Image (cartoon, rainbow, N blue to C red; front, top):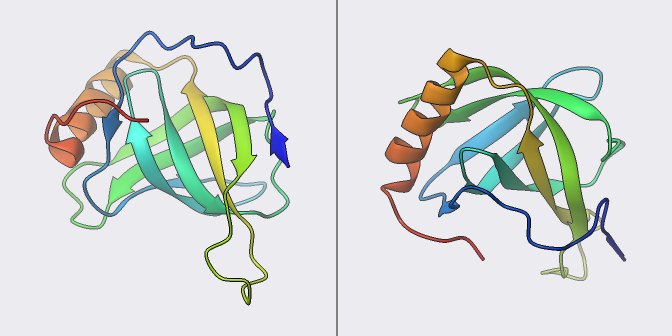
Length: 130
């Protein structure tokens, strides 16, 4: 089942870039979880995650990081704008993989610059997400 939290009309203001490596968003309490970044822009990102007890419409706070630890961006506030189940890769796995679209809210000056640096280093300037 697909859940569209808001109208699915294209509303992006920023170009998206596909992640080229092991980049993640670590969500903070009350439901700490980890999502792998699929694509990112200066306005938000989309992640791949395993379904849990998250509330998709709730404002969340998270950190961005990569396994090579080039850039970290801390304490980003955001809200989910879309959330959909992905087709199962293996019938034997009980976990449900999902893709969530997330919009950044209220980025401070230093966070904006850190997100730009994260995009430059972790996407190598490739174009367009799907």
